[in-house]
Amino acid sequence: MLKNSKVTLGLPHSDPVTESVADLLTLAEPLDYKSSRMSMGLSPGAQPAMGKGLLPSPGDEEGRPAWNSKLQYILAQVGFSVGLGNVWRFPYLCQKNGGGAYLVPYFILLILIGIPLFFLELAVGQRIRRGSIGVWNYVYPQLGGIGVSSLMVCGFVGLYYNVIIGWSIFYFFQSFQYPLPWAECPIRVVNGSQAIIEPECEKSSATTYFWYRQTLNITSTIEDSGGLNWKMTMSLFAAWLIVCLAVIKGIQSSGKVMYFSSLFPYVVLICFLVRGLMLKGSVDGIAHMFTPKLEKMLEPQVWREAATQVFFALGLGFGGVIAFSSYNKRDNNCHFDAALVSIINFITSILATLVVFAVLGFKANIMNEKCVVENAEKILGYLKSGVLSLELIPPHVNFSHLSAVDYQEMYGVIKTVREDSFDQLGLDPCILEDELNKAVQGTGLAFIAFTEAMTHFPASPFWSVMFFFMLINLGLGSMIGTMTGITTPVLDAFPKIRKEFLCGEASIDWLSLVKGLLASANGCWGGGSCNYHEPILPN
Image (tube, one colour):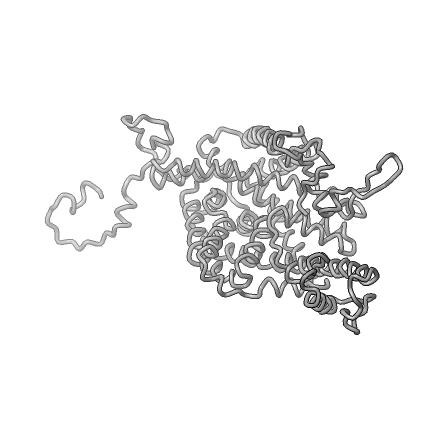
């Protein structure tokens, strides 16, 4: 409040009071976030220089980059929030926590927590026009460390996120061949003449073997690092190169990339959904997915995981949302932006869930039919050897065209009659529901389960190329937001640093760190020589 105001001086007056608090605050001299002790490194007793405003000066705002269009900004926020978690984490959580019933707590928490916090980050970034460090210094100078923490979190997220992009790049280039290299188990030559199927692959699956042995080239123990996996190292280098080229000129370059990287995944998801619905068993997968288990809604764990996914999906607290919105004009309608991006994110999660379980429903039917055939051959062997009597087989059962329903009936009869010795027969029930209940998430979904399902598609290399190119674009959109969450606050504090140097330096440091992790983390990422005779792969 001004010192010469009538209220302060206590002078009598007859004029009506027309000044509001907002009017008075506009006349007050604002604080300077750059003059805070955290920003300037001052000692507790030192006094910062006064006279500079907390918000950027008009000259700074004119020199600050800005989005070329509102569409470019929306696509950037969508690309950052919609990532790999929408494709492989949301469907897993939906299946694990009650199917369609999980959507209820997720949507409630999205409305009550997600959208308000997302709007808050958009608003503060747009109003203050600074990165995460500058925003928290503005809120309170002593809280600037929270912005530094957000920057560090972006760094750690970028480490593993770009590794996943590197894996996707490797699979993308491996997809340009027919048949796909993970479609069949490799053949080993024994004693120079005898050819046998790789025993380890036969005990697990072709896609599992390719993932653990050909891609990661894992070792059997943590003591054996195995050396450097050059295939993954070059893929990781390519991933960092793509990211740096996208962000090397700030939003001027990354904004243009978003036109493709944000929209192309939707084209692929729609194509996969149409193709998936044409596959046998896709309806079984979708019905299993969205059949609600309402009793799950009463469990606190379901609500906790729904809240976690809301924060993870919208990218709250990472600094990327604040960084993107800081390049907006202050009069931008961020209320609309917050609601639009959040709803798009939710719809994308539903779309990805439909695609995933349409394909997994097809895969479950394939695996169930394979189970029926294998167990039917066992029963035929028992019939020929006299272990089982022909009287146990229903008269309408035809082994040449044995359906899952007929096998279930035959299985039930044998189990009832031979109850004492049934376990010795080694027969499996071959229930479709059991296959659908096998929850898969993360890399297991993308690089094993989904990849295995695509091997049964007609023109499987085409769909494999499309799928992994989609993963690359999903990861790229999120990585651009992550890197912007790092470069924006640093460039705000040190405007003379060139973006090219910042990106190159960070990439060199991070690549060196990732190489060290890859070479020492149980050989699972670094690779090297493996003991192929020891079956360590999951069955």
